[in-house]
Image 1: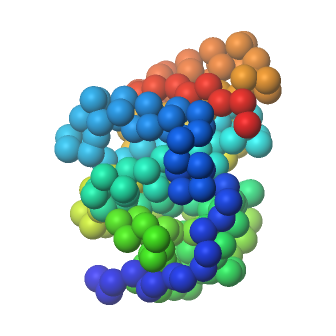
Image 2 (image 1 turned 180 degrees about the vertical axis):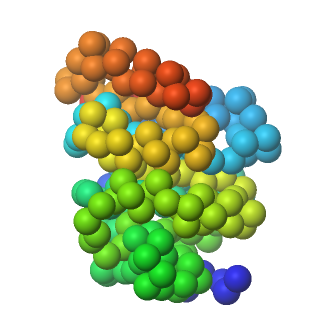
Length: 218
């Protein structure tokens, strides 16, 4: 396939690992990276869904920083914005209305046209959510997504999917069925214990592994 198109937009201040490399947030992301490395990523497995319990719990910001941090250790890293309901990756990385995942799945764009690289993070590639679409759950459950996931797994060392929260839609569960692994983001002040337990039962009940949970308060 063609090489990703370069993107030269300035990095967002929300990328704490660049702007605040010694902050508590960056250290928490480093701890999550260490846990993934200890669990065999990306040698034996390479695809992870990063999702929150409820909407606006910080999962998109966490997944962006985690992907960037993995790329800094030399892993060929892909961050996919699979949150077609409320996408955030293109904002965090200052991408200007790019085509993305939805356009690939609806055959409106080739994959090579939708991959973006970042000059400051040469091992990181981005696939934005793309053009807003109705029926995101149907797109993510179609055979085209399964084929795309397989294709991407052959091109990258590790893939992070940023998805809607589990209580928001079934989209996260659909993507997790293909990845097999979930990193759960729990907001200290927003996530109720009963909701956390219900989501965990839903995930494991579908044969999906929860490889860790991260408590955030931003």
